[in-house]
Image 1 (cartoon, rainbow, N blue to C red):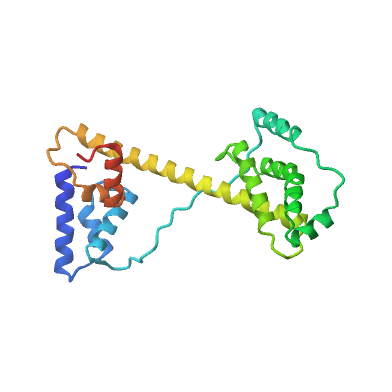
Image 2 (cartoon, rainbow, N blue to C red):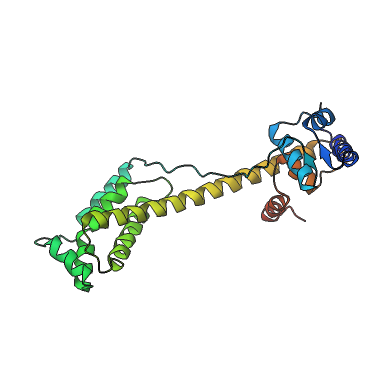
Length: 244
C-alpha cells in the first residue's frame, strides 16, 4: 500500500464525514478504501480511528475487546521430573502412628504442634498433587514448593472450625491452580509482547525496504494499519530502542 495514497484516502473519508455531520456509512468507507488491499484487521483499525475522532459509523456496534489467555492444561511428567519426584518423596520424613481426627481437632484449637505434624504428614500428598497437576508454565520443583506454601497457609488460616483432610487437600489444590494460572497469564503476556514487537518490526522493515516511498508512516497511521494502540507502539519502540 502506497503511503501517500493511504494518507489521501484517510483525509477523503474524514472530509466526507464532515460533510455529513460527522457520520459515515459502511458503504462510504468501502468505496473510499476500495483497491487499497486492506485486510480485516487493518479495516478494523481504520474504523477505530474514525470513531476515536468522534465520527459516527451507522450500523456499527461498540464492543469491548478482550484478550483471553489460553486455558491451563496438565502435561505428563518428563523422565527427569519423574526421577526428581521419586527422590523428593524418598527424602520426606516418615510420619507414623498418628490420629488425624485428633490432630484436626487440635488444629481447631489453635495448637501449633498440630500444624507442624499435619504439615509434615501431608507433604507427600501435596507433592503428589502438584505432580498430578503438572504444567509446562512452571517447573515441577517450583510447583511442589508453591504447593507446600499453600499447605502451610491453609493450616495457619484454618480458624476454629473443625477441618478434615478433604478440606485441606482442596485448599492445596486451589493454591496450586492459582500459581499455575498466574504463570500461564505471565507467559501469555510475554508471548503477546513478543508477537507485537515482531509485528511492528516487520511492518517497519517492509516500509524501509520500499524505495519508492518517500513519505514515512506516522505512529498514528501505523496504529491504524497494524490495529494497535498508539501508546502500545510508542512503548514497543522505546523497548526496542527505535524511538530516537
